[in-house]
Length: 254
Image (cartoon, rainbow, N blue to C red):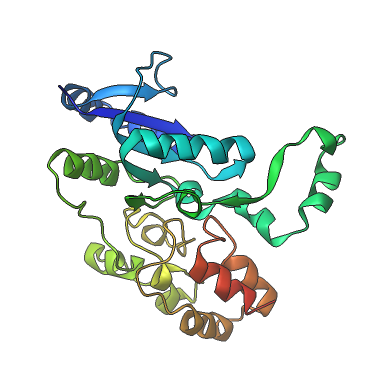
């Protein structure tokens, strides 16, 4: 029988699930190799577990999600988190840095109806994760590589080096060296396809920290380019603000 694939959503924007639908022609081939047992973004039809592979999008932001991710883990032979929300908490993890009760009072006219947790955290804070696929959103080529690796019982060939190496391979001139443009590329994992530097914009860290990021050294260079402590703090608090390397470096500039 074909391996069972399930795709799950928690607190997120659905962008990483849409990356799977964007595979288009490859999606037909994928459907021939696996049984898509649960993928509500694509179909209401579901099949019961257990599941051979679960792809999980989104951070854990409610008590209900805490319980559900534990159930999914029990039902899944392998569990892979996809995207910045699932791997680092995402944009919504910015609330981890604030007084949550105060935020609720400012945003909602009736905060008593809100049942969210005070934090938004990655899936790995709650259950064992077999692999993390980074990105905001993820790259569909990397997603297909991950599923192919699963089907062939091997480790996915996903780069752990920095965005700078991707720029060099593409022949992209460094925007920080040539134009003095702030860029998180030296501390960010490659994988986006060199999108922002290729059009003259600095990297925003969509794929989270690289394997061994030297964020302190990058911050010193960014200060030389004119960034003040408040700007540096905000710079690390983007899509992966809760990723340890970025969170710790942003805290140094409070």
